[in-house]
Image (cartoon, rainbow, N blue to C red; front, side):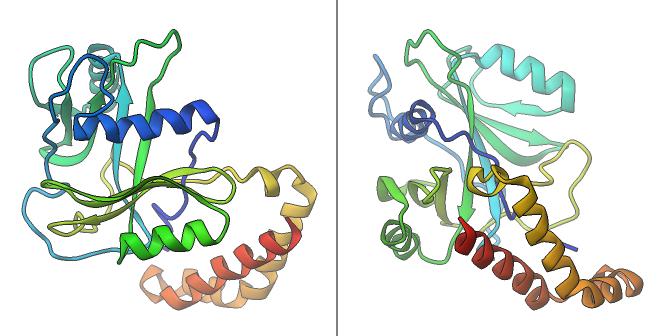
Length: 249
């Protein structure tokens, strides 16, 4: 079952939303403290793929003011490699695993007395402008209107109706190719929906209903191998859950 990168955990406080907006100010060279130099960011693929995986999270950037500590931590923990300026204030650092780009680090110098480190995730969409408009019309918020970022593509900083921050993204050279995740690579994203999980009994009941409705198809897929998992059936399960969570929320 290919359910990875479908859902995302993201902090939803007002401060973290502000930090998310500032991240892209940093990338564009605005609102970066003392610096007005634009940051040049690489594409999300080493070579163009011209293939898109709409509806999945395809990239992650970390905003932090503690670049040396972050590199040491993730390098020792996951064996991640880092490509960029050898500078504790390097504006952008590319993260690689076994030579493959998997994310980036944006240096922030906002001079706050709190830890401002935060991961920002990119959701691949077919049309950034249309997706942003849909979000705004359905209770979400646009924090940075769609714009084109050299080398990377078209982006918009938004939050959903519950406040979860994300980036709508259309890569200029295509999304990273899909492959089985390696050890120490991105595997899964999950959303902590406070409206659902606030009532654990109600949420458990919803999942039990979904399990009962699709149990036969799920069991057949497991018995016959993951290649028999039908994407349309997978989508039906998520749509059913989404509609029922909204109806009860």
